[in-house]
Image (cartoon, rainbow, N blue to C red; front, top):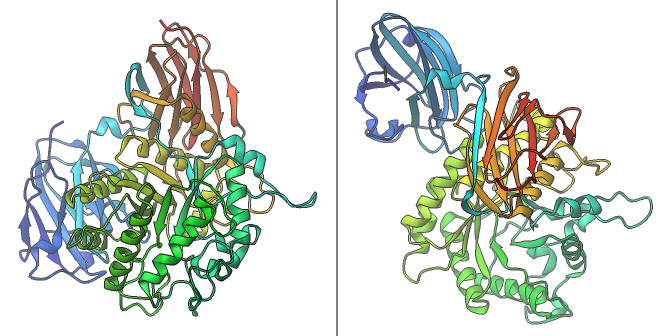
Length: 593
């Protein structure tokens, strides 16, 4: 693909509407490094810019004739792109939609003119950096309605299907004939793991008396070695219900988020070692039978939740009332103690909210002095782009490896579609509980399967606004339920095989096989903009199985993963037609060819 942009870009601080019409003289030149599409504009300044500071980026280039162009862009946090003064794309007021990004996040096309052209970008800095990503794309690949061919090879196995369909929180089991329940639906979905963060918000689980350390051990001055100091009753019941549904527990040691003015569970423990000993006894209760307990064999124990969410000087800290330094000390104390007590369990955390500079400081600190054990690193991301999830996963894995935690699992244990946390949040909720949210979820699972993340845990399966799986009032299945059902079919087959989607815009897919000629492919066609493109024809060809007995299961506004006839089928190819923001699961069960 021919590159039309100049290698040299220009940057200036400040902004006025007149800045779109020409490149001023008071600019600083810069170039992207070879093979990279991101540049931190802070590097051009004597000290980093301030949050929400405005600036302009320019590229002047020549074209021999009128030419169709295509671009990709991402930033931290807002940007508006114009070509020769004409608006092409803007992330105002919604922002970049993810704290992790590259130039695949926002893509758009434009027509350049013969002669000199000026690309001008208004960039507004985020809280953490002034990073800016930009690259040219293939204009032909930008058409979302060009027919796509998906080729797969059942003989090329990439590894196991990963638990991309884990969740936060568990099922609700009816207590009487008048009580709602989603227990049987939950069992059918075969959800592998449930993290129990924020369970205390749900009365059906036991509410304020459930899971959180200050609920299980309500008087911090009590004796941690005395079973009478603990209140396990409702947590016992909640976890057992989840296990009965066939889902394993991922236990968060800490507290639910606290948005209100007065805080209870997110306070800094007055004695870090005693807090660790309390956690030790909770583990012994659920895994070793201590205090009339159980043998649940819970492997994952996570220390705290989102200590990085609010800076040290925030007037309303929602997850950790102390400083960054204090949390590092708490984590070191608890992780070292628990790993010595339970060397075969997985001890990790800290459920990062997404502040990557904080992550780097945390991992560096954990490696200093006595190396702190970290069996898994947990982190969160919300946004509208599945590709941003993949970019974040690669960033986390890179940072873990650079700090010597090469064996630590990377677990994304909170994620969902979020268009905006402010004025766009009502639209976010409507999307989460509808078809768009279901297709976004499937696309994210497909991306996660192909990137260096070991588990995804959807937030949230408890009755709340973030639950796109079960209806808040009736607990009946929403469109998102069928995404989890489809992924469970891939998980049952077991092994992911090579699948080439040609990277066409909007198409995400994953395939699995049992090694005996049976296979399944999950294909989703996801778009964020409200204005959706037309139908797309997709041809699917698999080496290693026959399409003769293939079944196409459709999820759209009128189908709930129900069988529909394909557009066409022959001895080697099956053709389907997909609308935007829909999903299909194709089952192959023919004889090997």
